[in-house]
Length: 346
Image (cartoon, rainbow, N blue to C red; front, side):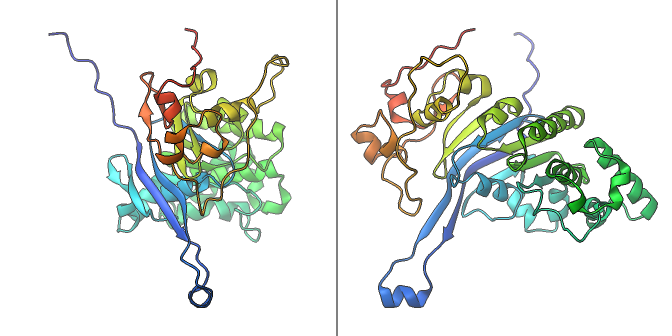
């Protein structure tokens, strides 16, 4: 018998059938007087994915598709209505509710979207970055704290002298670097990044993304990167998940997704990107509007906007399946061979 190869390590992050429903009903008295039913918003509806150590999974999709809700589920800001999230083989949501909450939160940190809202304007930078160090009991000595804060500021391209300043004395890009330094204070293994560059200018975006890539290489960080900017996703990700109305419709390696997108929605997203050399090529425009998430269409949620729709699409909700190339897609038209899939060279 040939010698066995090295065992494949289990993914660091495993989300299984994650769902979160919000009750957005009018007050009870209004419902009684006006005869209105309860209204439930299925913000995330059965999302499953894995992220290997040191890799980046990017979630993309239009505003309101549930990306940020997934982020908040993974860091314990929301409890799931259904499903679960395993971190390094441990039930993370059970840990968040137990005495093991602090060790788990130390290993999972989040970078928020708005650097203007996520930093306390009344605190100096030294206090902002030192807070997680104090809270988790990592350091308490004042001299050691100051030294560590200076190291963290240097790791994100700022000066230790900046620790005496307030957030309003920094630009947006510098504030986001401070947010990254704060997230790195507990030496986490997994960073959930909720559109960390969307509020920044393009040139500043590149600087922040390069810092994040360098930190990932040096510290072996694992990222969930949420964005609606496909150019950013192409730069930072290893895998890409495309979300639509709370569900994953396609999950693939970055190269496969950009070279040969399967799902009609993914194709429309990629066709919407302006391309220098494709001026004569016909594009598939993004048809229609996103349906009301309070009353999504039956069957495939994308069916009112899909050029390949048929009766099955209007009545039966598709499930993610592996098409044989490692890409997982939720589409009846792909499963039935009604869509031609581009061939990837090499």
